[in-house]
Image (tube, rainbow, N blue to C red; front, side, top):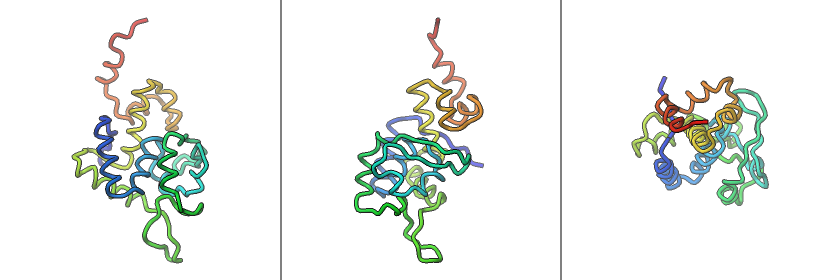
Length: 184
């Protein structure tokens, strides 16, 4: 099993987003949703236009946990609105070019999402990248900004704070550094 890590450097995230955007606006929107909501790629690719149009939140039933969750999207609404312009409510946001056996278009697979994003990550020299890197990057930067591991644990549906901390790639050194100078 390959180890997948968050992208910890903001400049690297910006470069990654820009490179993905150059190749495909569809893939760029997928990256924006992943980086800004913490959704799993398996919950992102089946999203439809009706899930985001005229909405402030994405409401989904998570595939892995089967729990219904709400994720705010107001901060990426402009890009989403531009992307879905001219699309039908029932269209998949991340529509595949191929059709299923009934001739109906479906969404891209998680494998295809991985291949497309991994190609860009490799080109930029981003190591230990996978589709979970989007979710982990969200978690890492959410924690760095808020220091609220309990809330992040809830967002991720993790059973313990230590699982969440391991998941987002916090090392003991980072934990020690964050507590430097902390005194009550």
